[in-house]
Image (tube, rainbow, N blue to C red; front, side, top):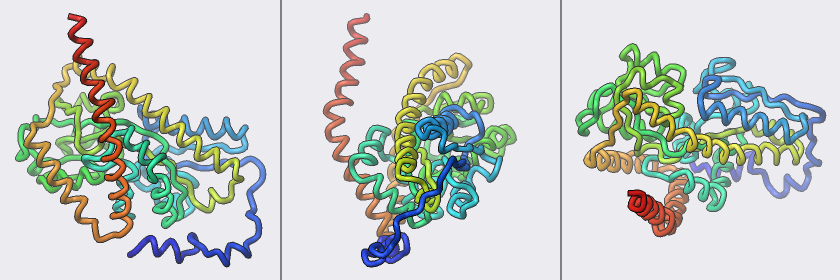
Length: 364
């Protein structure tokens, strides 16, 4: 289906003639409580911090007119059922990761992350400066959502494994938890891919239902206890170089808010994105050192495995190129990434390499 045409002809798109006859919008008055369903267990490091930050910011900035009632995974609906809960009106907002919902539209993944895609800074450049936000809004409106990114984990680890990965052949038959396009990629390499919410991962590894998993990174993974059930951790992954979380509001609910309240929702989400990214970066380094001290073996995938990831990633993305909106969003992502990396590769990346080299030299 051509979803851009859908938007133009739907009630969401509207028409100039119809708009001219509409009365001024009616906004709900008084204090309101909005129910936010989340894909995360209560208290889970990093992602639940983002939930709490967003909820606190909305209540504070609205002087108490808006209260966000956060419901963790399983408290109202399951962690992977939040999209349906909000689009159906069962809940008002969800906090999740869009790549859980590629079954609704494959382009959803780009608003979390994509294999060999953007780092967190590149994602923010695209989203706020190169048209990503509007593309997210266009896609969300199809499903009756007002969209925002509202959290950022930074680069995620390549995963935890019960056995060392030394070649592409090691993925054959491997029972691996990995959502989004990354899961499709390792599936092409022979893995038996599963998608499950965070609260189920530890037990699945303990029972042997999983041979490996990716989650987020050292800090969140340590809190989840993955080091207790897997010996090998791969810090660098191809699948999530910078993963955004989303705070999406039922469109009818959002439009019933006053303009000031709408701006509060948007600004609280944007601020939460920065806050969460900083929180993950601040905690991942110390957590990694604790994991190493506790006996976790740190590994990196061999070059031939990285190359296999790359070939399979292109195959996965190419299979959706018959969808106009997917093509539009993919091109926007790739154009922005090339433009940003062309500068950052000559500035930030070069500087960081030289800084680390020079500081190590003068400290000898």
